[in-house]
Image 1: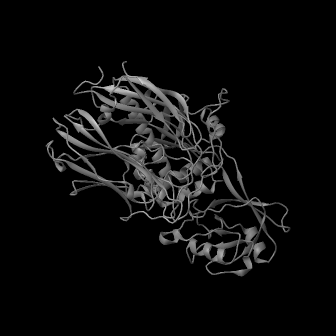
Image 2: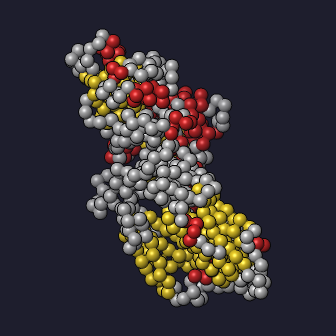
Image 3: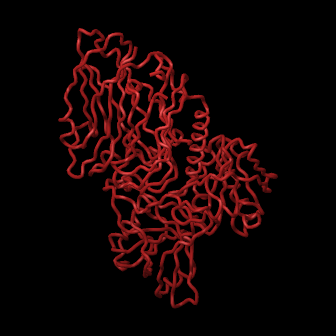
Length: 607
């Protein structure tokens, strides 16, 4: 094969995924079973769009700011631009801008390439942007000041901008986590009109229960720190303070309340109601939210009059849109709870994607395997490629596998799990004489790949199926590498194998234990911390959590270990290798619904 020259040819995979799939449920910070989520997104319609779409070029614009004029010119773009439209009608945004940790993440973790333009949707725009700037200045008082030059505050309301930004904000209107206006609507025979106030629901992965569409009776339960039998079947109206949010919700749940409304003390902002530490492992089955204390509601309840409440979400313009490094409109995704970290993660992904685009400009021999082909289920997509010879999210160095291309034709198959929605995929092989991922250049050439073990059901019999493999090192071998791709999936009572810590061991010659541990599996931000590597941020569902060797949208890089010094290199002496996998250092032994390990492993011989 002419392409497989003895020294310099590198084999690359480029994978493009251009569709959404049905969401999978995730494991929160307590031990519960995973279920499929309720958010299903269909493939984009082939009909022409009625308005601006992600990927459309962003036109130039200028807006006045508190520090002069901000000008956006596509040709002069140096990095991503995030546009945030504030409204005081959103409890989510109030908390976003009042939380010390949220503001700290903005001023300390915003990528250096990124600028942010702050706007307001309200008539109170001048007061709004002055307050936002003051919040940022206070947060930056004891941290880096450089970021302030990249934060721009405009005193012109969105409805008076006179450019394309309002159209995008309104056309991309939404409702859900961090988007739309979540509200509590109170009614009483004592009033002529309902009282509607903004609300902020408790952290989504702490309290899974959601408000129903019915009307609830409201009962004043003091501070909610003790059980209160009178709230049975009603929504408890409790004040903040004197005990934790967890204690309030737990006490009201024990009192058989249908839900909890925690109202703020005078002058206090809405807070992100969340559990702390071991509290997160106690299952509470009622919803809760935080609201400001309304005088009419408080007085009517104090007089013992009947008050009912229902819960609604009013659509609003989008609060966040963006322009990527290529000058194209881009969505910011879901903010699952109120923190500017979601802005940072999206900006990090823009940097990753721009770097990928740069790498794809390097010269290479490109062999197309799939070009926007639909893939679904076990049947997947199959293509046979004649090796004689997009734009992607994954660029993976698989040079050690070149020996597998040992004929003029090779068949490639891409699959999904049976329950997933279809994907539209493209796959290219890139042959190049230079390294394009930034990894170290290999001085030896792989000439043989020896298959070892695959995965299986992660139960008490998992390790019984693996027997030692004996082998000798081929003549002329200069280097031997252990090469494995391993991921954990499914969920037993321990969250295995997706959200539990598993370790994978390859023992060579009964002396060398080569171990790969998924120590971030199940952690709250395990995958969020890998956005810079390509994990796709701000999705629906549980993308934030660490997983067993993989993250949503992230390529699974092979685990590679140089084992040359662990081997008998003489052809007259044999070697052994054996594999086993453990859960928390022990053989797996789930009581129900065992998960599974997907694995391919090999020894690669170089000369």
